Image (cartoon, rainbow, N blue to C red; front, side, top):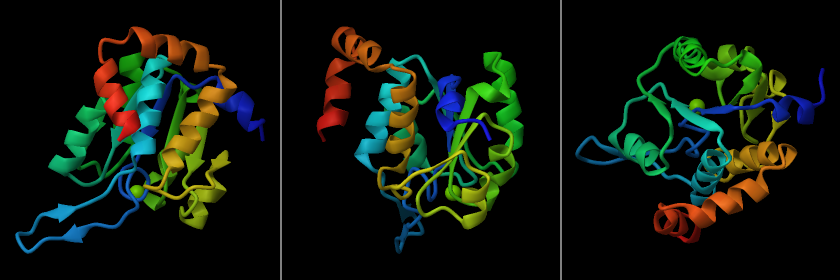
Length: 187
Ligand SMILES: [Mg+2]
């Protein structure tokens, strides 16, 4: 297997699963039928940093949820797909739309529904509490768990090997969204 740092260097897009990856997988069922999930602010900051580094971001989730969609908008994720049964379909759409090779895409996931697309991407990353099968197909296994900073850990790894921090801080300074970003980082 190629060195994980060499693989991470090529990444131009990061795709993320939601349940168990951006969230811890738990949801609270409300009497009115709605459900509540929680997200980690550190993960959100990571998504913002990836964008500032010029890396595209996408969410592909099997479920549909107004809350998740709102969170995706808040973080200015480039592409959002919900209610997806076969995740390879939006994956190929994204490759075509952005003119990317499979090797230029990272995917962060936690469970069997992610396995097929994770077997195709250049950099497959599992959250720390991912299913063992998912860990087996991954180039990187996060120490942190889904919804508890795993996404941030993976994004930091990619940004580190790409030496993106100077760019990110320069972008942060000149960003007109500075106040929004600052709120996210400091909340
Ligand atoms: Mg999941």
